[in-house]
Length: 601
Image 1 (cartoon, rainbow, N blue to C red):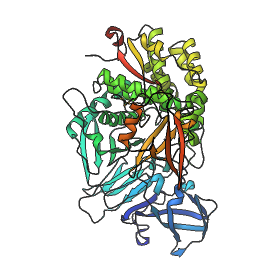
Image 2 (cartoon, helix red, strand yellow):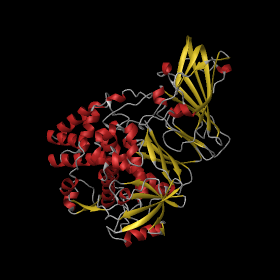
Image 3 (cartoon, rainbow, N blue to C red):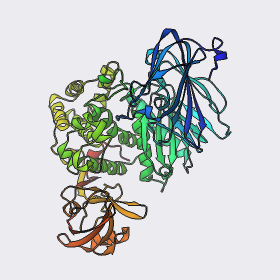
């Protein structure tokens, strides 16, 4: 960071300066300095964002700030805390330097992480905002650490850096500054081009990736999307990826995405024709976040012009910005040739199962799910499957139905793609309202389809997935969720003759009930989430005995179940139920019709 001796030599009064130093990896601390120039004596408000775009939950980044101090004209400045996220500096003028420390121990794509293995941060989690100076240029410097193996990667425009990438970067405003994540550590960089635009996949963490195949597959996906939109809103793009034992997530940014994935998801090839499901899921995640470069980073709700990062901003439109994106992420994999048709249909079936099963979709509409994303979706509890709908998965199913209905009504002359392009061209500069989306659907498809979509979005009634898919040569067969996890599977399920009606997890050598489905056998037996299963029918409740139990008994039979709840041992009577066929399996029944929608060999 520039020192006071450097002031007037290389610092510009119309620029805000940050230094974010990975100074203490063992204690997970970033040391941060902020400098700005105050032309006339005044008090100055500083604050940390409460949330960041793309992740709709209040995170209160200010709670991770410690050891705060401020200096002006070589004198310590007094300050007060007006609220949990703000610091108000009392009257100051000239150059002001603020020092503080940020605790970075959230291994996710949303905040900041630092240990001896690698570091990551979103500037929104480490960079104080000075609202009065938001529209000035912002420079951010990351000094190198004493480790020659570490490199730094970011999409922020470079001012000056060493060969490892540590140095100074610039943004035109605070809003732009917080849209460039930083990744540092022993990096693996995989470069490729898509439509003559430089791209790179950057990996940190131990991995066993086939980088050649990853580059080839990502190139095909990116080119498919750029071709669809007929332009790219960036001149380069980075997939910044943290590789861990178990983890999954992504967050979009203006010319990059921050990703987290498990090691085994980067090992693609099982044979010469198909990839493993986890690898396809990673590609789907990349496709999803890449698609957001257009559908949320450029085109977004009018309410988000601009973002207000001090409080919640409620919108009903996340079904379009996340749900449609969730449909198109896999569809672009399929259309690019990366994902064979049957594997794609297996993924569609899994999405439909997640979207439509359980009591939740019968109780909450997709529009309400979007409106309440800040609480019921982003802060889900163990009762979520009984209470809420998902604007991601159910939004994706509605997007699929809209796509297929538009194709049918126009005799294959139009599709969801035409709707997306029209919305983008018309509203990217000003933002959308819900009625804008329905209006474009009415114009591109027809008014009847627009009315039907609005009903699907507001209603909790079943969706006509079987009827619509049948018209495209797709057969829909009911199937059951995995008997242990109660999750819909891509590759087949372990289904017995009875169902517990509860999702189970292995935790520290024990079997714990994670979720209980309403009116299921476990619920009627008064079992609860977080109960530890001890025994079923007086036999130890390990995975093997549970799997044998669900094939041994018949619906209607009763057994004794022992659980630990807190520190109490409870005995309950459980009457087995038949498994519910509330999941979906899709297959091609008519290839001629299917190829109107899918890319077939």
